[in-house]
Image (cartoon, rainbow, N blue to C red; front, side, top):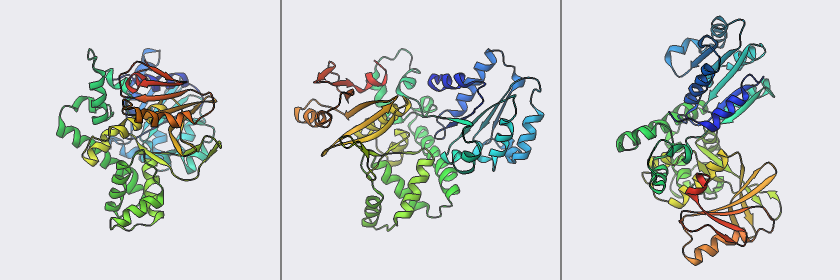
Length: 397
């Protein structure tokens, strides 16, 4: 079991704080495992088994507890009256009106509450209103490359491992089956089907599943490209599948809410303003894309997607940068500081190097600027722009 230290440390820091801890993220990214790791920590630090209740609402044995009143009574009946109780509710979105249970537990002094969900609507609407200021969200992603290679003890060929990481994706269980081609494909397909059926189709009452799949394939095939709703509609229509903008927007919103897609807005660096159109989209896992499209090419897009996810893991708010007529891949903001990133597969050809440097050279402020590539070259400084190997950057070297 890989220790998800980044997320585990956050839970440890929040222990016994009067906040509901909400772990969100795509299905199978490791939320349930994180709960187990944290429970092990509690047991090693003076908390008894009787003080811990773990309920997974995807397990049929807990189906009766999907009634929020029965759930509340069950938790109270099994709690330790004179000690702190640690309550873990996994995939809580399966319980209608679960917020009533959570809120009722929250107002009691001896409950520390942890919940997970695989859809962003978990924190929308009534729950957000009812629990405003009472919860903290921890957004979880599949394995980082640093976490991924920690399972390959003794293998120092990071280039080979990175190629596997891009190809197979980063869901934790993929490490156990990545050498079994058919099993791996079936597993990734099952994850995607589960997301579409449970978090997209059923919740949004989508009847035209074929239409949804076409949009999904288009979005997966166009990661890192500017994709307006109009462009998507026009592309679908020209291919003989007429679709209206409202429907496209509904599908994309539901995929974002299910943490399959991430939308990244554009930012005018010179004008210091956010642009209203021309978003780019990235995906939660490259293995899902490779399985759906039946290819693992487009290395440039895959590494750009990987850099975006890593920036999110590191706590940055990320935008696409516009500088005059050029574009910076990522403008990353955190703690009142900005960092600029340009991502390229290779810059060995001089014309490619100049092309990739130009957007960063157009920025006149003094914030850090990085050019990330797969080339293994001595780290170079181009008048303040630092060229770094992507693998070294991912591993914090």
